[in-house]
Length: 295
Image (cartoon, rainbow, N blue to C red):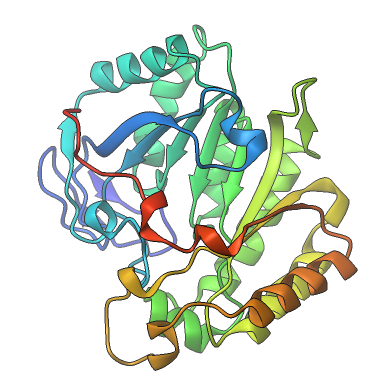
């Protein structure tokens, strides 16, 4: 396949087993883990956990990625359409609150027919959990099959996004993608148990040394969407354990309480609501153990 489905528009000729694009992913699905995951936001995890499917590869290459074993090193197993469908239905039968597709951007077009097919048997929402680096056309194509969008909104500064994620156009792209997600899904809807059924939950990881950019993100978001239509999740889980590189000494330490709290307070003043993390979450213990079980 000639791949142009993400904003990089690599035009890579991805075959069934070898990935030649920026994401280093094949045409067939490659996944690093599937399991009930209890460490998402409360409205996502629910009682038994979110039914997560972690896809290998990524269309960003963030130097601080906690899932770098699968996103950067691209480890995982290639699975067929039918196998992935079975995995999704099995997660439902195990009591998953939802089907949580993690870093699926580079498989978006292949997911559309699968989601169309499996929706006939699903009784739980489908979540699209991505970096926010999405093309508007891909979002529109996925809209009939995705109930909840969970994008990151990582940066405003193009210099920062270029250095840390190889994407100097990140803000330009995300500032079109996230409002489109809100447009196609509508305001957040929670069920009687407090579980998210529809809408957009925007995540942001506050990085050490860059709280000004984090606050600028919420200034921008307040212009792009109605703060009451979305939920936000302000993450405090950065740990230098996952840092790859030498050019950003500020990333070799943990986030301070002042840095995190100042971003939280700024988001609240702008009218956003959602979730915050305790400082104890900034440890590698919460990172999934990829490849601990056979796919």
